[in-house]
Image 1 (cartoon, one colour):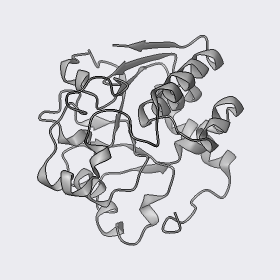
Image 2: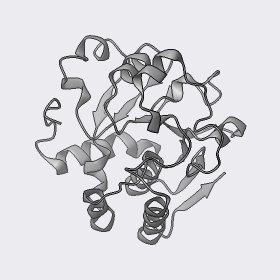
Image 3: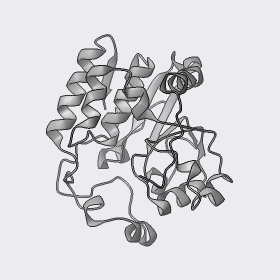
Image 4: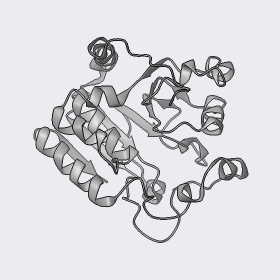
Length: 224
């Protein structure tokens, strides 16, 4: 963590900047695409959609959910993943991560040449809600998909459509895309094998999802 300088001097100012960026799109449906196997079967209408993707999604065979990504979420630092993302065909409009990847000198050379427009901390935004924020100092953490749902709810989206968040069920492939030789070398076995890794759990995910629904009862959260 020492490799990532703090980039938020004022949490309130930072969160206000996020809201200014997102506010014009709150009348849209927020489409959250996880990377679970069921995402391969998804075929939603994305007209007037706010599209959220995460981690290694760009390994997909085709850009069936469009080339424009309104919000990209990344919870870990993986240099190879970020390098490949920056060189991909996708247009990343907002980058959400707990740390300021942009100020790590070892990756500036390619991140600053990318199309990334703004970098925000979704963890700082989630901390606005006390009930949810306190969960992020506990372990195990909710997985990235649940973090994305929490972020969308706190931002104020009223309709959240979810695809590919499968809670790591089943014994088959972990993701809807195939790993490449480079991605396999950049990952640990826990990141490839089916099921939850030790830092997460299905009980935590379901508990946090229930908490999101309690905190925001007027929001429609639909798993497709």
